[in-house]
Length: 394
Ligand code: PMP
Image (cartoon, rainbow, N blue to C red; front, top):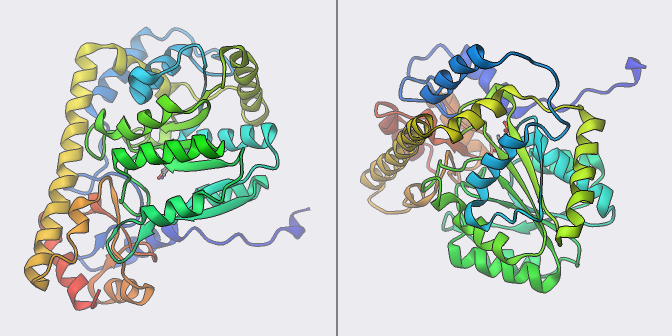
């Protein structure tokens, strides 16, 4: 059987990480993998997470299975964090999943089960796992233009133009905030326009929100998505706790489905629970329980929100410092978009050759499409990166 296997394409980011580790230069900078890092290059366990875990060790007296949908208390608090006051209690089905990736996978499984002929519309570019999972599941994919390489912003006219050729029943994947890889995001007005188009065309939005709290704040980051959710009859939302709780390896995510009417809630919930059963049975519980404890305890919650806010403002400060350093060196505001972007990533707009030059000459490691993880910078390395960007002729 194994003789029939052919090699899979190597994961570019993992290969980049390995090359970084082997680079002996002490000026090297890792802007590759999508993990938050503090100024010392560490990805710390957040204070509230440590504290909740300590409490959990004391109070947990069984590790028997939860339900197929996970712990309902987790679904309740996380769906409130994501959806706020547009959360439709009588139409909201939820399943806990292994991370945001698991939520996306389960959402696409649900789409395939319910509407096997529907197309999935993905932004160009998008997180590579979106098309990869869709392809693996046999879900047909179309792309809509999204990023304007000239301005570093969203090409909204092109996006709307492309989406207007979608057919009723097609699913539109949208990044809830902090678009990966570009860093360019829709304004609130644009979210409303997308919602109107979705309604007019009879499309179904699928919002992937993996960075709530990393852009403009926990509430602000959810605003556009909530404006959409308040308008549309049905929707899918995949939320990840990996980044905003820093619990990457605990695999904590939630798939939410908003059913078109209350009488479709139970069949929707049943399908989602069954898909969990078929893929992995019970979802992981540890991270979900920690999140639930943090969000329901005033002291833990405010400490978590404060630490997350420090993470967010730290990244914003790095963005501003990098844009300023480039303004100083180029005498233009050509890289001003780096300060306007939000979240962990920005697409710099360098060619693959320039990316390679920066790696070879300056020990700067970014993904080949020139996606930079801003959290990989610190006050010492911002000027080094600015020098390298200018020297490479970006
Ligand atoms: N969506 C996007 C856009 C992401 O960048 C990520 C993480 N790289 C995820 C979903 C899923 O993250 P995880 O499975 O680690 O929760």
